[in-house]
Length: 65
Image 1 (cartoon, helix red, strand yellow):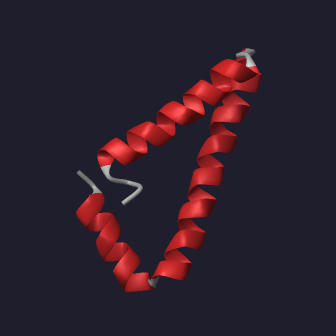
Image 2 (cartoon, one colour):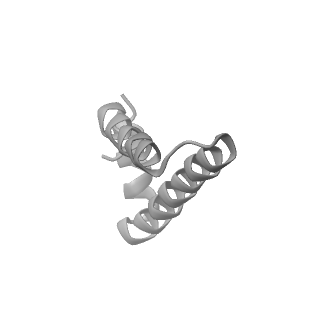
């Protein structure tokens, strides 16, 4: 779904810069999930499953193209 846009941005800014930005975005998203889980009191194993689910959804949507 988003793969063409992701590929365009990667080609436009360069692979190295794109990978840096993508890594920061993934880390920020994982931290947001962790903060939410800590605030609500969700166990670490459930938190890990949520992060895995986010990664799988990103692949399915083409965000990790």
